[in-house]
Image 1 (cartoon, rainbow, N blue to C red):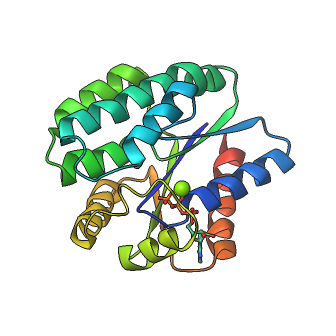
Image 2 (cartoon, helix red, strand yellow):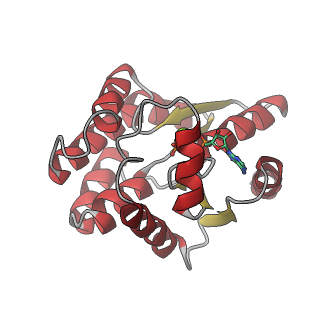
Length: 205
Ligand SMILES: Nc1ncnc2c1ncn2[C@@H]1O[C@H](COP(=O)(O)OP(=O)(O)OP(=O)(O)O)[C@@H](O)[C@H]1O
Ligand SMILES: [Mg+2]
Protein backbone atom coordinates (compact mmCIF):
# COMPACT_ATOMS: atom_id res chain seq x y z
CA UNK A 1 0.00 0.00 0.00
CA UNK A 2 1.32 3.37 -1.09
CA UNK A 3 0.01 6.32 0.94
CA UNK A 4 0.75 9.95 0.09
CA UNK A 5 0.19 13.19 1.99
CA UNK A 6 -0.29 16.39 0.06
CA UNK A 7 -1.14 19.98 0.96
CA UNK A 8 0.33 23.44 1.19
CA UNK A 9 3.05 24.70 3.50
CA UNK A 10 2.24 24.18 7.17
CA UNK A 11 -0.95 22.21 6.51
CA UNK A 12 0.24 19.46 8.88
CA UNK A 13 1.54 16.80 6.47
CA UNK A 14 4.72 15.87 8.34
CA UNK A 15 2.86 15.85 11.68
CA UNK A 16 0.25 13.43 10.31
CA UNK A 17 2.81 11.29 8.46
CA UNK A 18 4.58 10.66 11.76
CA UNK A 19 1.34 9.85 13.61
CA UNK A 20 0.13 7.45 10.93
CA UNK A 21 3.54 5.76 10.83
CA UNK A 22 3.46 5.23 14.61
CA UNK A 23 -0.13 3.97 14.46
CA UNK A 24 0.56 1.41 11.73
CA UNK A 25 3.80 0.27 13.37
CA UNK A 26 2.04 -0.18 16.72
CA UNK A 27 -0.56 -2.33 14.94
CA UNK A 28 2.09 -4.67 13.58
CA UNK A 29 2.36 -3.47 9.98
CA UNK A 30 5.64 -3.22 8.08
CA UNK A 31 5.81 0.47 7.23
CA UNK A 32 8.35 3.08 6.15
CA UNK A 33 8.26 6.85 5.74
CA UNK A 34 9.92 8.87 3.03
CA UNK A 35 9.58 12.42 1.81
CA UNK A 36 9.82 14.52 -1.32
CA UNK A 37 12.04 16.04 -2.24
CA UNK A 38 14.36 13.80 -0.26
CA UNK A 39 14.39 10.31 1.17
CA UNK A 40 17.77 9.29 -0.22
CA UNK A 41 21.24 10.83 0.09
CA UNK A 42 21.00 12.37 -3.37
CA UNK A 43 17.38 13.35 -2.77
CA UNK A 44 18.22 15.17 0.45
CA UNK A 45 21.05 17.04 -1.31
CA UNK A 46 18.61 18.07 -4.04
CA UNK A 47 16.11 19.04 -1.33
CA UNK A 48 18.58 21.58 0.06
CA UNK A 49 19.10 23.03 -3.42
CA UNK A 50 15.32 23.25 -3.97
CA UNK A 51 14.12 24.48 -0.59
CA UNK A 52 16.87 26.84 0.51
CA UNK A 53 18.13 30.11 -0.94
CA UNK A 54 16.59 32.82 -3.09
CA UNK A 55 13.20 32.33 -4.73
CA UNK A 56 14.54 33.26 -8.20
CA UNK A 57 17.84 31.37 -8.05
CA UNK A 58 16.72 29.04 -10.87
CA UNK A 59 14.07 29.04 -13.55
CA UNK A 60 10.92 26.96 -13.32
CA UNK A 61 12.09 24.23 -15.74
CA UNK A 62 15.37 23.73 -13.88
CA UNK A 63 13.38 23.52 -10.66
CA UNK A 64 10.90 20.98 -12.06
CA UNK A 65 13.68 18.76 -13.40
CA UNK A 66 15.46 18.74 -10.04
CA UNK A 67 12.22 17.75 -8.28
CA UNK A 68 11.77 14.92 -10.79
CA UNK A 69 15.40 13.81 -10.41
CA UNK A 70 14.88 13.59 -6.65
CA UNK A 71 11.69 11.56 -7.23
CA UNK A 72 13.50 9.12 -9.51
CA UNK A 73 16.14 8.43 -6.86
CA UNK A 74 13.54 8.07 -4.08
CA UNK A 75 11.45 5.76 -6.25
CA UNK A 76 14.31 3.46 -7.30
CA UNK A 77 16.04 3.21 -3.94
CA UNK A 78 13.26 3.46 -1.37
CA UNK A 79 9.66 3.27 -2.60
CA UNK A 80 9.81 0.57 -5.29
CA UNK A 81 11.82 -1.95 -3.20
CA UNK A 82 9.59 -1.38 -0.15
CA UNK A 83 6.35 -1.90 -2.09
CA UNK A 84 7.83 -5.03 -3.64
CA UNK A 85 8.55 -6.25 -0.13
CA UNK A 86 4.91 -5.68 0.92
CA UNK A 87 5.87 -2.80 3.15
CA UNK A 88 3.44 0.08 3.50
CA UNK A 89 5.06 3.28 2.18
CA UNK A 90 4.01 6.67 3.51
CA UNK A 91 5.35 9.52 1.40
CA UNK A 92 5.31 13.17 2.48
CA UNK A 93 4.41 14.85 -0.88
CA UNK A 94 4.59 13.13 -4.29
CA UNK A 95 3.48 13.62 -7.88
CA UNK A 96 0.54 15.91 -7.10
CA UNK A 97 2.95 18.44 -5.59
CA UNK A 98 4.66 18.53 -9.00
CA UNK A 99 1.34 18.89 -10.80
CA UNK A 100 0.07 21.62 -8.44
CA UNK A 101 3.25 23.72 -8.06
CA UNK A 102 5.22 23.11 -11.25
CA UNK A 103 2.32 22.23 -13.55
CA UNK A 104 -0.72 24.31 -12.70
CA UNK A 105 1.04 27.21 -10.88
CA UNK A 106 4.25 27.47 -12.94
CA UNK A 107 2.61 26.65 -16.28
CA UNK A 108 4.81 23.71 -17.18
CA UNK A 109 3.06 21.18 -19.43
CA UNK A 110 1.01 18.76 -17.32
CA UNK A 111 1.39 16.13 -20.06
CA UNK A 112 5.17 16.49 -19.94
CA UNK A 113 5.26 16.22 -16.13
CA UNK A 114 2.91 13.23 -16.18
CA UNK A 115 5.01 11.54 -18.86
CA UNK A 116 8.23 11.90 -16.89
CA UNK A 117 6.61 10.87 -13.64
CA UNK A 118 4.93 7.80 -15.08
CA UNK A 119 8.25 6.83 -16.68
CA UNK A 120 9.91 7.07 -13.25
CA UNK A 121 7.20 5.06 -11.46
CA UNK A 122 6.22 2.72 -14.30
CA UNK A 123 2.68 4.14 -14.02
CA UNK A 124 2.28 3.35 -10.34
CA UNK A 125 -0.09 5.72 -8.56
CA UNK A 126 -0.69 6.02 -4.81
CA UNK A 127 -3.45 3.84 -3.32
CA UNK A 128 -4.62 6.69 -1.12
CA UNK A 129 -3.79 10.39 -1.01
CA UNK A 130 -4.64 12.57 1.96
CA UNK A 131 -4.95 16.19 0.91
CA UNK A 132 -4.79 18.40 3.98
CA UNK A 133 -6.52 21.57 2.88
CA UNK A 134 -5.84 24.86 4.63
CA UNK A 135 -6.00 28.59 4.02
CA UNK A 136 -2.35 29.41 3.21
CA UNK A 137 -2.44 32.40 5.56
CA UNK A 138 -2.85 29.97 8.46
CA UNK A 139 -0.48 27.36 7.00
CA UNK A 140 2.34 29.83 6.37
CA UNK A 141 1.97 31.29 9.85
CA UNK A 142 2.41 27.78 11.31
CA UNK A 143 5.29 26.98 8.99
CA UNK A 144 7.27 30.13 9.81
CA UNK A 145 6.64 29.81 13.56
CA UNK A 146 9.24 27.14 14.14
CA UNK A 147 12.92 27.14 13.21
CA UNK A 148 12.79 26.12 9.57
CA UNK A 149 15.59 26.70 7.04
CA UNK A 150 13.73 25.16 4.10
CA UNK A 151 11.65 28.25 3.35
CA UNK A 152 12.33 29.02 -0.31
CA UNK A 153 8.70 28.17 -1.16
CA UNK A 154 7.28 29.74 1.99
CA UNK A 155 8.86 33.00 0.79
CA UNK A 156 6.78 33.01 -2.38
CA UNK A 157 3.78 35.36 -2.45
CA UNK A 158 0.49 34.63 -0.73
CA UNK A 159 -1.16 34.75 -4.20
CA UNK A 160 1.12 31.90 -5.28
CA UNK A 161 0.12 29.83 -2.25
CA UNK A 162 -3.57 30.53 -2.89
CA UNK A 163 -3.13 29.24 -6.44
CA UNK A 164 -1.41 26.11 -5.05
CA UNK A 165 -4.39 25.49 -2.78
CA UNK A 166 -6.85 25.81 -5.67
CA UNK A 167 -4.64 23.60 -7.85
CA UNK A 168 -4.66 20.83 -5.25
CA UNK A 169 -8.44 21.02 -4.90
CA UNK A 170 -8.82 20.91 -8.67
CA UNK A 171 -6.67 17.75 -8.81
CA UNK A 172 -8.41 16.03 -5.89
CA UNK A 173 -12.04 16.91 -6.57
CA UNK A 174 -14.17 14.13 -8.03
CA UNK A 175 -11.46 11.51 -7.67
CA UNK A 176 -12.03 8.92 -4.98
CA UNK A 177 -8.32 8.19 -4.56
CA UNK A 178 -8.19 11.39 -2.53
CA UNK A 179 -9.52 12.25 0.88
CA UNK A 180 -9.65 16.00 1.41
CA UNK A 181 -9.28 16.85 5.09
CA UNK A 182 -9.85 20.20 6.78
CA UNK A 183 -6.41 21.12 8.14
CA UNK A 184 -7.70 23.78 10.53
CA UNK A 185 -9.07 21.27 13.05
CA UNK A 186 -6.87 19.80 15.77
CA UNK A 187 -3.95 17.45 15.12
CA UNK A 188 -5.86 14.72 16.94
CA UNK A 189 -9.03 15.12 14.87
CA UNK A 190 -7.12 15.01 11.60
CA UNK A 191 -5.28 11.91 12.82
CA UNK A 192 -8.59 10.23 13.78
CA UNK A 193 -10.04 10.81 10.32
CA UNK A 194 -6.93 9.28 8.75
CA UNK A 195 -6.67 6.22 11.00
CA UNK A 196 -10.38 5.48 10.55
CA UNK A 197 -10.00 5.74 6.79
CA UNK A 198 -6.89 3.57 6.71
CA UNK A 199 -8.55 0.93 8.87
CA UNK A 200 -11.47 0.72 6.44
CA UNK A 201 -9.04 0.30 3.56
CA UNK A 202 -6.72 -2.22 5.20
CA UNK A 203 -9.64 -4.37 6.34
CA UNK A 204 -11.05 -4.39 2.81
CA UNK A 205 -7.87 -5.90 1.34
N1 LIG B 1 -4.03 20.60 13.10
C1 LIG B 1 -3.08 21.43 13.57
N2 LIG B 1 -3.41 22.45 14.38
C2 LIG B 1 -2.46 23.30 14.85
N3 LIG B 1 -1.15 23.21 14.57
C3 LIG B 1 -0.76 22.21 13.76
C4 LIG B 1 -1.69 21.27 13.22
N4 LIG B 1 -1.01 20.38 12.45
C5 LIG B 1 0.28 20.76 12.51
N5 LIG B 1 0.45 21.86 13.29
C6 LIG B 1 1.71 22.57 13.59
O1 LIG B 1 2.00 23.38 12.45
C7 LIG B 1 3.38 23.34 12.14
C8 LIG B 1 3.57 22.81 10.73
O2 LIG B 1 3.15 21.44 10.68
P1 LIG B 1 3.86 20.38 9.73
O3 LIG B 1 5.33 20.56 9.77
O4 LIG B 1 3.30 19.05 10.05
O5 LIG B 1 3.30 20.89 8.33
P2 LIG B 1 3.77 20.49 6.86
O6 LIG B 1 2.54 20.41 6.04
O7 LIG B 1 4.65 19.29 6.91
O8 LIG B 1 4.62 21.78 6.43
P3 LIG B 1 5.73 21.92 5.27
O9 LIG B 1 4.99 22.02 3.98
O10 LIG B 1 6.41 23.20 5.62
O11 LIG B 1 6.62 20.72 5.35
C9 LIG B 1 4.04 22.48 13.22
O12 LIG B 1 4.56 23.32 14.20
C10 LIG B 1 2.90 21.62 13.74
O13 LIG B 1 3.08 21.23 15.08
MG1 LIG C 1 6.57 18.95 6.25
